[in-house]
Image (cartoon, rainbow, N blue to C red):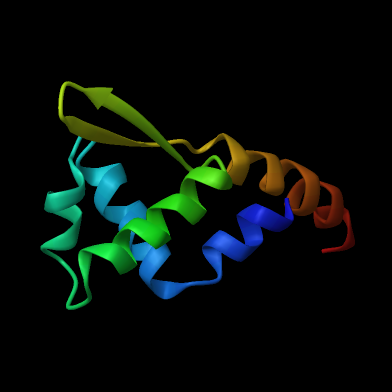
Length: 88
């Protein structure tokens, strides 16, 4: 869970997740267009998101397709929101 919280702590990474969620199968270049930072910085963000299992990268020839994986977020929701909602 720590990796997921760390990944979601960055505004840029949350924006990347929004882009990938809205455009499943998009490539790295399509994500880079939305930011004013280097491609290397985007790749670092993508690596962190992949390590947290929030992104699934699939190679299709020379292209890398990006897919959003909501399971880690659902696990956090199940663990925290469901458990502590009884206090509300």
